Length: 147
Image (tube, rainbow, N blue to C red; front, side):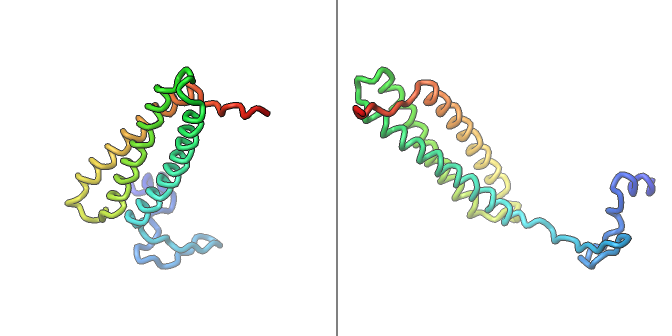
């Protein structure tokens, strides 16, 4: 059984737990420290926030284009409504991400609440994607400026 573990895990069992450098033939490797979940979650949330900001800016630009076209545009009301829903949901997701980042992942008493918040934010992001698909389907064109 031990030989199977070594075969499946290669030389994983030969590493020392104290982080000492281990010799493997001619190469030297230092074991990396364990993953800090708070650091990982903060980086993940920061990346999500940057994507949210980009989408928020795109929606603001789309809203401006639709408003410049005015009520005579065929899909004026549906687009204003969809873009407003998208922007509102993005703000809600941003607030949820702030709460998720602020809580300590290592505190097991908060895992349930963090899980609920992450599930809610995931569902809202899915809804935002669907709403933005409809915004794209209706088409937002910039008005001709008479060039």
